Length: 517
Ligand SMILES: [Zn+2]
Image 1 (cartoon, rainbow, N blue to C red):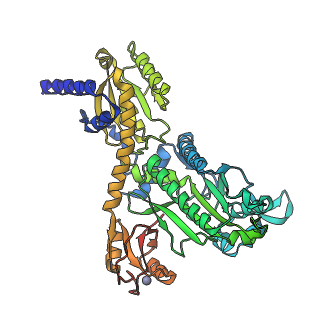
Image 2: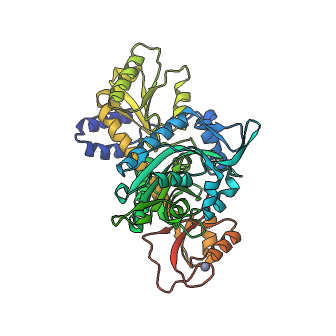
Image 3: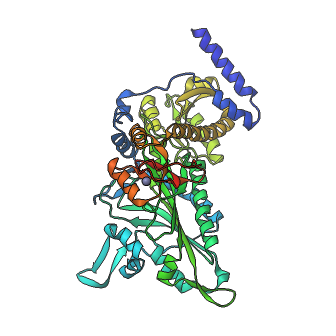
């Protein structure tokens, strides 16, 4: 037995030495064998409810115990703790860059919106009325006009655009703001649905319908790429049904992510608003013939809900699994027998080397046992853990574990830079592929209503032919205890002469049905 282990170690080291370019290195990382199982301190991990036993409780345990958030004192509100906020900042910074690359400029608009603004757009007020928080007094004095705390800013921004916009030469005008929004929801869950949430909302104005429609789609693809590339979320995109579209929009496109319990989480929407808000707010410009014309607008938004999506797409029984590109800490260094001479020095050197390469790195030199630390950082979803102790230093080595596959390998100290770079990239890609495989396994194509119910109860999404009628959609929701239409995928191929999965009338589209958060 002993001999075998030594031979294995030698082989691993040899393979490491022979690796040259980064491309090969990635392949090699994927092929690296797990040499030891990761030590689990069962007592500690037992604090998280098993994912398969009770998914909602598992989720709550994770978001609270990893200190992403806590409950606020007012029901339905949430405190985002430093670890959760660091994750949000990484998401925000990356998305902000993408938005700027699409020529959005950041600005900030007030959170207090005159009630008359929201009431100007009929569908908009009807859609938001039940969730509007209202300011009526300052001190003891009643305000002349009640004010709403922004649920979204189409009306506020519309009002300002009407004031600013003069000529077609200023178009397109693309504005984005990072802010909070308040929607007084009855049922709340941390990150998924909270009375107050953080988000970005981007609003754009165009001279013609065609450009505005194209922008709504461009923004949808921007989200799809961002969520795949940074959050490893293999999202589904497409148009929403009439019933599910945004209050005041002509077309709403949705971004849906599949959670590990088979439910869908809407993680973003992009709206083509036509001239609805232009006409309500008088957003006009002079065209090249000096004629005054109403503009066409779009809006797009995504929120701190993305954190919930990351938790429920990638997490496991040990806790969070964070995509390296947004993880607050990408590499955690755990010194073993840190009181022994040289151990902390080596740990510091590794940290310095990786920090210089702009990785987010931390050392856990607390007094907790190594086993406790391993579990702690696994629970927090840190993608890579490096352990280094006296024996490793003697051999010029360290132990590197990856969070996604829970495998561990031995690496020479002078190979850390390239190894970690390749490993983080590999973890990012592996997480996307794993989530994609899980998603594809759980999308079922059905033709009949009993099949639909059966597939959804078994934790799947369903792709089915549908009549595209609101009445039918509502009936499905009632008869299935909450199954809703999600999106009509652009690439779906509706078979000739197919009929609606529920009412049997001629099918007009293919749509995804699922239970949703
Ligand atoms: Zn139907």
